Amino acid sequence: MNNRITTLFQIKYPVIQAGMVWCSGWKLASAVSNAGGLGIIGAGSMYPEVLKEHLQKCKKATDQPFAVNVPLLYPNIDAVMQIILEEGVKIVFTSAGNPATWTSFLKEKGITVVHVISNSKFALKAEACGVDAIVAEGFEAGGHNGREETTTMCLIPQITKAVKIPVIAAGGIGSGSAMLAAFALGAEAVQIGSAFAVAEESSAHPNFKHKILEAGEGDTRLSMKKVVPVRLLKNSFAEVIAQAEAEGADAEQLKQLLGRARAKLGMFEGNIEEGELEVGQVSALLQEIKPAAKILKDIWQEFLIEKDKISKLEFPA
Amino acid sequence: MNNRITTLFQIKYPVIQAGMVWCSGWKLASAVSNAGGLGIIGAGSMYPEVLKEHLQKCKKATDQPFAVNVPLLYPNIDAVMQIILEEGVKIVFTSAGNPATWTSFLKEKGITVVHVISNSKFALKAEACGVDAIVAEGFEAGGHNGREETTTMCLIPQITKAVKIPVIAAGGIGSGSAMLAAFALGAEAVQIGSAFAVAEESSAHPNFKHKILEAGEGDTRLSMKKVVPVRLLKNSFAEVIAQAEAEGADAEQLKQLLGRARAKLGMFEGNIEEGELEVGQVSALLQEIKPAAKILKDIWQEFLIEKDKISKLEFPA
Image (cartoon, rainbow over all chains, first blue to last red; front, side):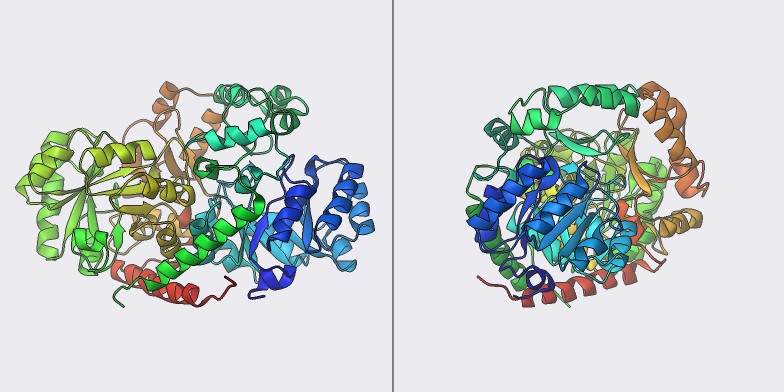
């Protein structure tokens, strides 16, 4: 244990696997936790009874700490929180909502709480609500992110300046060098999504994983800003949204085009043209499908090597 | 001299002041060069005869290396290049255009050439054209930047992987910790715009400098994507553009709203509501107007301190 985050979560490496809809069930979370990081079950795409099953399987698959990510704007939150208590979850990451709503409830039960934010205002609010740490997520991250479009490079220094609690950097991090950059900016851990979405243990459909590996620069785009901003991988569906937005479509028209269950269609069922594919800019750097433990190990080894290299740089005072 | 960039330019610190329209004349460029960085005169906002005057004054003000930035899409390029030769400029940064057009012309005259890009495709093209180094500019940068919207965190590793020539990171860098992050990502120098736009020696109007200092998170926005993307500071003019874009305005309508000389009106003449104000996201972190030498020194000291801190972090192997 060597910094505030590894101590807080009782983990070996300051690497957290992001809770991701349709990707991060018990298989991925337990694999990451068994490898010395913090695995997270993404409750956002799970009915309460499905979450219960994943929690039970995760506890059987690992004796290491793991967490659950709960996007607060999803339905069934009361049922989800009840299951979290029943199953004895020790760490909860909340996102996409107001940290005032559930933080004290969870803290009273002895649960460690982390909230995901994308600006200083919400970082301060989360800190005031008593969360133990902050995930600061930059513009380059996949899925839903902030309206300010602040990138990880600019966001992390702002957040570490604003709050006293430890900050976990998210967005654009899929390698040891990017992890080192996040530490240079003041983060005490990183949260990694896209690189784990293509792990062997990710429940993403193989079609989606391969589409991520094929992605190049400029192949994701922050979309649906008039509804809730979300970073989408380019495909037929994303093109329809882009065209509608260029022509001035309003929130109602965009919601109509989105329809229902499109994220599941794309990421879980593998319809990579008509489905909604959420992934970060870092997808352009991802090359292969590997076990989660190997992903973590490769990132960690590169982090140590790059840290050593930068330590040895010599410059005039 | 200690890495490929400091050796290439014969400078003490791997810190380059960005060429910026209406901000970077001979006063700023010579101040940065005298302080041990590389100062750049931004030719983009200068008529050829004005550039000539700035070059002559810059040579009187410093015996250290300095450069000129030439946005290739501006008018009068032939005249600008002629003056660059006449005045014996030794380093030219080209941007906003095709590196094939002028690189060999300049190289034949013994001039060091650097090209600014925002994706690997153009980095490779610039390298093939024979440029000596690349500036890779991320989405968070001020002024005109790339359509792919790739952030510095994601862009630098892509570019350093793509090319063999040294890479200078730009976008989101206004502090020593951000500079260290850029080095962690593989850059060998940084190019800093916004932080030098508020230098005492910057020719930006004081109203613009104070507006930059007041800027908070989310106060800049990448605009005019249907014409040429440009990051604007929020004001009445930017709101008019944002509104028109939300309603689906096309390139022609946006150009009409932009009109003529709006950048000069805002940044040089100080009309901060009706003028076009170009600045990066890092403006939210800038606090005061200082001499350029002090800006450089503060960044450098912080870089060394943060490098030392990160070197001492201890983690399991």
